[in-house]
Amino acid sequence: MALEDYKGVFTFAEQVDHKLAGVALELIGKGKDLAADLGCEVTAVLLGSGITDLADTLAEYGADHVIVVDDPKLENYRTEPYAQALAGVINEFKPEIMLVGATAIGRDLGPTVSARVKTGLTADCTSLDIGQFPLNADPADAKQNQLLMTRPAFGGNTIATIACPDHRPQMATVRPGVMIKKDPEKGKKADVIDFKPDLSENNRYVEIIDIIKETKKTADIMAAKILVSGGRGVGSAENFKILEDLAEAIGGTVSCSRAVVDNGWKPKDLQVGQTGKTVRPNVYFAIGISGAIQHVAGMEESDIIIAINKDESAPIFDVADYGVVGDLNKIVPALTEAIKAELAK
Image 1: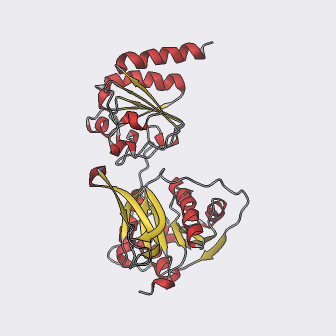
Image 2: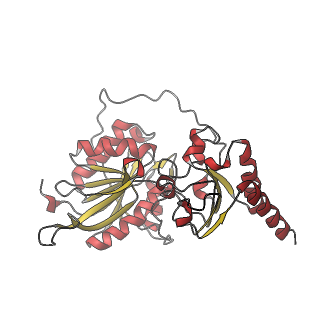
Image 3: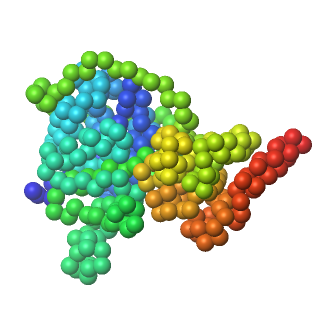
């Protein structure tokens, strides 16, 4: 493998039902930062059927080029045709870096494609940087301009930085909400490259008999500006009523920790943390949450963090901007009433 033949930062622009996933735009934003360090450009890869018009949106969010693979076989996500398409793009255009969102689709597509193009993949990254590898080696002995892919490991008890110095592209999946979208440049047009890879049906093609779409009844916590999040310390599913009252009073949304989901008190869609969702609200209430690293990884970028916990040594206070030590059953209702009274003035 001639590593010098691989140039540029590519991102997978995931779309479903002709709507771009938020992480597709987030990856372009991060891709611009990486490309600036490498002195190259960002290319978004858009797969689907009848989706060429989405290219301009990708350009507005920073893509210098958009490779479009438009084919009826790609109308709905299926592993085999999508893997053939993305692997075909990589083999033809030879990107140095390939980023994929760690969504249900990306977690299936990313490793499938990395195996086909014979490279590695680092999953669920929380940070991406350009630097030398090994990290602590003498610069003269290290490989420069490597993609340093950082992710929690061993259940979140340690942070690992991984590189792929001997193979290309360097591939990573990134969780939605971790990276930040750039402000769009309205009216910017894309440099569109139409590409027709070989999409050959084989025994790995599946036939979609029917698609049943279910309307979600839970709130989108990743879009919430204020989150009132509860942990094991809330005590019971019924006791979440006091958190719901607070959220209603301040126009917020209720979320929770993994322990709450494991106990069956709240659905998985409301979970914040390493195995849940990454959120960046303006205000995050951490109520009855101890502050394990797995949870903090999903909310530490919140603008303001307010912790309420009876244990004054709880790790959550290390990341909180404001902390209240005491019984949440007394503090939260009192806070709710105070907010209601203030709003009624």
